Image (cartoon, rainbow, N blue to C red):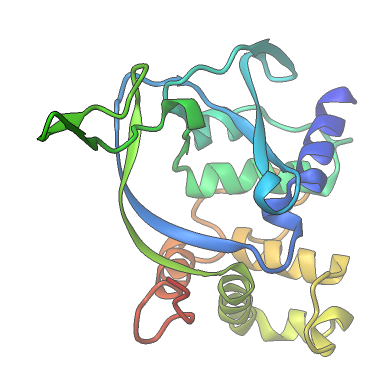
Length: 238
């Protein structure tokens, strides 16, 4: 199924998910609410040559997407509407069901911030002994970082969430080989099932589960936010 293959390719190529020591930052951002299409972006290149390539599309039906041009506007997508309304089929793989049930349970909003839409700071120019304030923009902008609250390693964030979730269902996780090894970066199917069954409830890999089943949402959101705490959370990098 091309639709399923596209999800596989995107997730497997998404270095924000697959690389071990990414950085995760919490920002305070101001933005123009006249949104454009959401950009599904993958990181390319290495070092200073790293850059994102994004795909924007309009969903025509549950399994039909129409590519669109991404704009300089902030992209917006409602997660439950975009990923939690099209019921998978009995032949779909487990990760398709998990993606669907996670979207229904947690919902939320995704925003994409295109580089060409970023507001540049004003600059000071000196002309004939006078200071002049110039707008840094050559074209309309749509978003700006006001403050970076904290930055942590994704490995620390991931470890805290795994530890917190596994405590809720230790009997299941104790049977998984990948958690018996130190410094593990890849997890087996046993781990994936325990994680999803604990968060979403049993059979979440093959049926639509009630959004209230599994762990209460607050446990997961508290685990996530606690990682950014300056005192009890992950080490702050900047």
